[in-house]
Amino acid sequence: MTALACGERDRRAIYPGSFDPITNGHVDIITRGLKIFDRILIAVLENPVKEPLFTVAERMAMIGEIFSGEPRVEVMSFQGLLVDFARNHDARVVIRGLRAVSDFEYEFQMALMNHKLNPDLETFFMMPSVRYTFLSSNMVKEVHRLGGCIRDLVPPIVESNLDEKKRRAERSIS
Figure 1 (cartoon, rainbow, N blue to C red):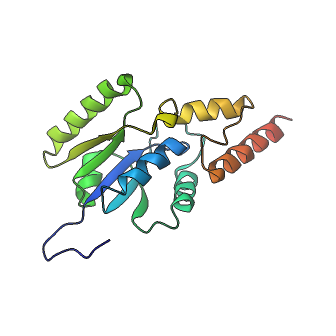
Figure 2: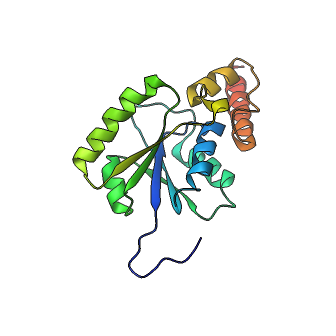
């Protein structure tokens, strides 16, 4: 990364999500996003309404390990409005992945609402690589729960943590 000229802002983007768990599709978007942006803030959503498999701390730790060699990636958690998080971290771009046309309507509405709340905030839509267009965190959890192989779908740390969660659940049942 080159030094910024006097008064020039770095091109930072926020990639928000629940990441429960992070998949290779998410990693693909982040890795490709680093070719466009100077920094990416991965914003892990704390959503008290949802019952995630992994705690926020566990999700942040996995993401932190995956990107431990990339100083331009920072992992944070947030709750509340994304526009407030963006303003507090001096970011003007939100990255969102679009897997299918069905994602577009929801993401488009969110982008418009975020822009209404903060006209300086833009949404940057990225399509995942073709091999990940079908992939979702929920699908990964379901395939793993039913004993399917997820090796090509998630980073090794995620597979390991899913295995451990499954072992603990099986022990608590017996």
